[in-house]
Length: 169
Image 1 (tube, one colour):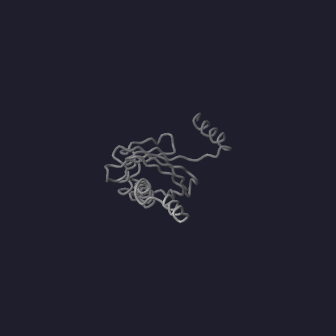
Image 2 (image 1 turned 90 degrees about the vertical axis):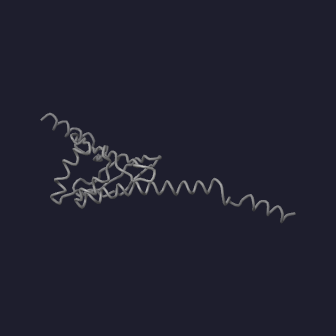
Image 3 (image 1 turned 120 degrees about the vertical axis):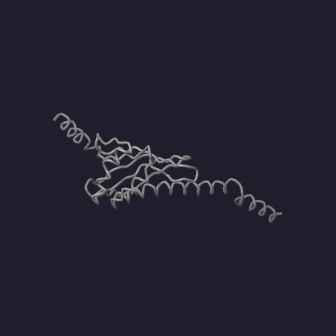
């Protein structure tokens, strides 16, 4: 009787070999693959910028993408951003932003992200935006990328004062 009781308890404690946990693992694996693919698009964009490879850089963006830079005037559709950046790349100049912390969330054919970046000239920055998958099995393309400076809260008033004083000039 005791052996039978142990057998019943052991069977109840055994994880199912099929069913919801297997589906959940499959869903997690698929979600991770999608997140990795979307992240790879961002990584290619950063690498291409560092190598002044305009063709690869702009191939990561959709035809309707927007780029929002650190300056208030930098709110470009992709055609305007290309007009600005392609001559820079043609001179063999690029820009290097090294992502070191990224959060990326995928929901269907959309992924949104934020990433901390390091740059030799500007130090700590942040990138954020949205990617869209072009088809069920398609590539991820950047729809919007926003680059911003990080300002420590204890220095924000001084930074704002500098910006206001420049606006008055």
